[in-house]
Amino acid sequence: MRIQAASEVSTSPARSHPRSPASGASEPILGQAHAKAILFGEHAVVYGSPAVAIPLHALTTTAQVRPLARGTRIHSALFHGDADDAPARVQPLLEAIYSAQRHTGMTQTGVELRLDSTVPYERGLGSSAVVGVSVARAIAALAEVEMTEDETFEVAMDCERIAHGRSSGLDPRTVISQVPIRFHGGKVSPIQVGAPLVFVLADSGHAGSTAQAVGAVKASLEADPTRVSGLIDRLGELAEGSLEQLARGDGETLGAQMFEAHRLLAELGVSDVALERLVDAAQAAGATGAKLTGGGRGGCVIALARDDDYGAKLEHVLRSAGAARTWRTTVEAA
Ligand code: PMV
Image (tube, rainbow, N blue to C red; front, top):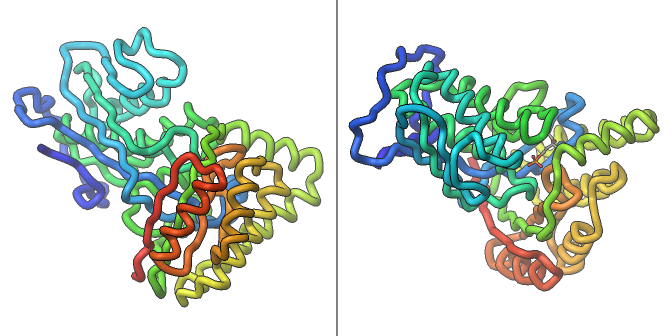
């Protein structure tokens, strides 16, 4: 089995010329990518503020590809069949395939692609970016072309544009990264983490449309520029300030900043009743911090737990408060 994961992806701009696809290969050709969660700076990042995000290694998507004489066939949870018959919801996946074919020079060959994913759709965990990155990696492996991180990012951005319209690029950059990142003005830097941090993610059970949430923030900014730009600036300050807390491993201050970021996001109009209930339940149960993560108006909450045992209790608390699913992840010191 051949899997192209991030560790195998070249960061150098040099790349080989495309060879004919590995059609004789007996083993499946796979590309894999993990989900992400935004710790600080969602929405504000669209207006140029810094943001901080972490990889979620436990939630992954695997794209399996094989060459076809012509055309594009897909097998995913949303659709099985020919590209010509695919519904609108599958267009981001198709765009990822076509973009990866353009980037690898594999435009004369058809592709059959199967997508297996544990990343929930439309829950603020970056599912479209994960699709873009896993497809880019699979098609690069099929074409036997070395794709750089920047090219992988470009494929994921093509997918994101179809899924969300305007995208800051934060999601694809975090999905490509193996470590937590600071993202500012399109530039990425790894973050220093002074002590392990245990996070719990809770799915509100409701889909959130990132495009609609981003559109709603834009409309509020136009309607009330002074108030809304103040909220965006403060969200950016919290993201920048969190770097020091993360470096020191200061969970208490970090958690307090998460609660504040959540209140600001609610004022921006991107929270909802289910997300409020989850953040309130986390706070009442003594979580160090909690906020919505990603586009909001549905999707997930991310909460900070003081240790792993408490994280397990917090998962239980959040499920009792209505979470459809929960996950636990530790960001290791680095
Ligand atoms: O909901 P997600 O996982 O697609 O995250 C969106 C993050 C936003 O800041 C709201 C939009 C963006 O392009 O950065």
